[in-house]
Length: 145
Image (cartoon, rainbow, N blue to C red; front, side, top):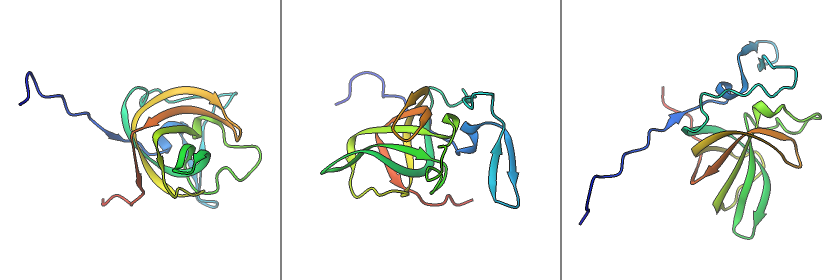
């Protein structure tokens, strides 16, 4: 038996990667996004800060155990972290999870769902501008539009 009011449902916003990296234009010849940066490349969008988001991206594993990956960089698309220098912080989301994701591999496409924070930090592969402590990670499936 439940006592008191029911817990409120959380509102989850689907946030494409383009909404965290800044305004810009798509380069038709190379099929890449050319965001507008500040001089430090850390011009973070504050709209998703503190919101529960559902964000797509690819996994670059950073921490793992026998149970799976429990720390990774979420990047906008597969292959983005292969080049030097690494992408700018406003393109990267540092993700941790208490429950490791079994069988996670480099470049797996996923949806990460949880509260997002605009919280710059450094990792071994580059600096990230955002952080998500994920309670839910799903295999990516293209939305039906």
